[in-house]
Length: 174
Image (cartoon, rainbow, N blue to C red; front, side):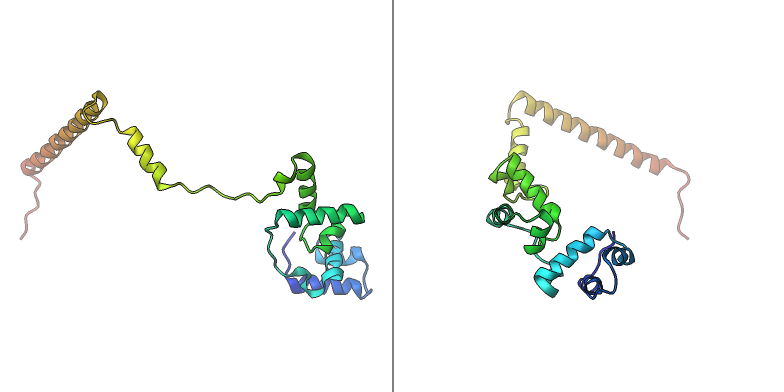
């Protein structure tokens, strides 16, 4: 299903509400399922032109509970409740309802998304924890290994310099 602009949604709803076309012919013309068009119609009837404006999707726990309580007290369907509270999809309310039934109110709290930030203190502590104390056997072995690598590097560098000097293929400047 492709995304539609606010104006297109209002236009399709008005085509249906004018009575010129039925629900299924309009939904076929738009290229969406008739239930999606029916959702649009309900949202438009409850909120008018403001129904399709972009809105915040971060809901508080209190708001979620208000929506669920309204649905239970008034006996409205999930789709109708979504239209009344101007929630883009009814599946959002269905998810809230299942979470409340399965886990409880704590499940309705918003959770931080994404990967947590790494603190600089943790990195510094990890480095400190991995470096052995000065004078210990591990520290001396690490220093010995570092010096051996440095020595091997210098030997190879020296050999390369000597080979370059001995090389008969030197290019001469004219």
